[in-house]
Amino acid sequence: MTARVGIVLVSHSARVASSVADLARGLAGGGETAPVAAAGGTPDGGLGTSAELITQAATAVDGGAGVAVLVDLGSAVLTVKALLAEGDELPPGTRLVDAPFVEGAVAAVVTASAGGDLDAVATAAAEAYGYRKG
Image 1: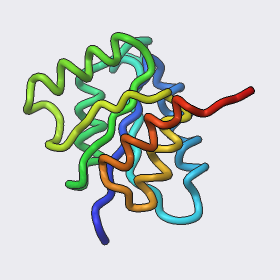
Image 2: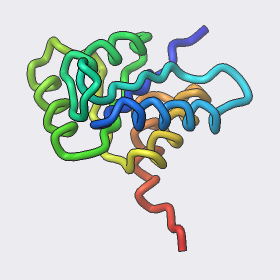
Image 3: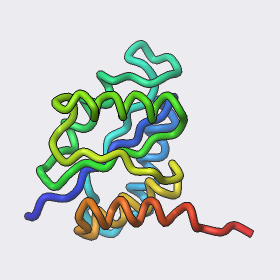
Image 4: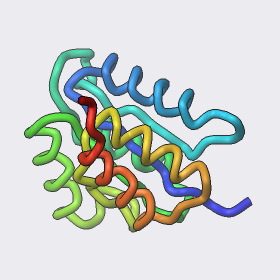
């Protein structure tokens, strides 16, 4: 089987990250989905972001096709950017994707599950900014 892009969902809340991962997997159903990992909250269960949890999640979903990281709020962005700047903390091919957290996660997981490459996954997630609700 060809490696699929892995998806990491970073939230300040473990429950939010896990729930969005479950939602995205569910909506991408109908077959085997791309690997998805939630990296929410702090290691002690508090609210916040954790470089350690993000690194573990990215490593867990890395199959060699790249890893798309979607985040919820400001300091999560900063934590991922710091990890990317370090250069050796995240798997090669890891990319921070600028996208709405929930809608972007669903688009990313659907696209990755269909075999899209990292560029296609990032584009699909970013296009979720254009979804109109009214």
